[in-house]
Image (cartoon, rainbow, N blue to C red; front, side, top):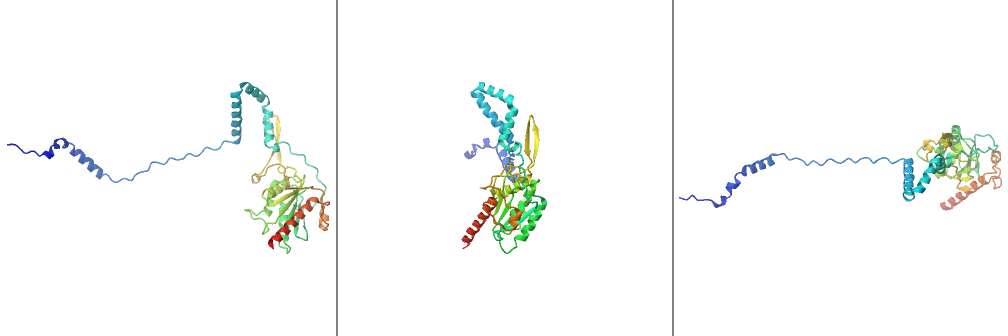
Length: 317
């Protein structure tokens, strides 16, 4: 008697050993807890290396140029090597002086003109519309005097059309005294200015404007709070210290951190005119006329302020 065979289960003898394995895999898969996908760890960006010092960049540039010369002309390169070996100290000193003439010895101080001894002179010109200021030596006391002068002048009925700051033959041993007086004219973060609204400031300079007075003129000119009229300044805004390096001596300007944007060279006025003759304080106090012959720099500054005021009045109309 034949036993019936189910044709559909013909492959069962082959699949039966695999069934337990498949069931185990399925049960294991569904039994595992759902896990959140963990992002790969972020790559930390490395901080960029600090820029090389200017001296290193300069040496690398010179070295690259010499390598190019050596590649094209080895004989000429050896000639340059011999010359640099014998004159390296002189070449280095000459190079530094080319970068900044301030490293050379400062100009000899010119003898001061005789002037009336008054720490801070002030008066009103052009029918009290222009304030004339002439500090002799810039000191901490000069700031107090200037503050008192401005407090007395600003509230007056006749409004100012401008200020003339006469720094001819002015000085001051501490360059920061120039910064302190500048704070009374500026409208920056310190808010020390007494004026509610800025007015044009014209600064008179000559070849004897130096030290703290030269710093004050530079600050007013560079910040555009003021405009300089007159002659080129002396070119000694900062004290200097002589240092010895190898066989050469250098005169190094000592620049305070607050004045790092000022260079230790002379200031060339925006408007060039003769700084002499100069009217005396007694003549100005007697209201003697300011003319081109008596004081060309002061006359030019006064005429410029009057012209600016005339233009402003026409604009208001």
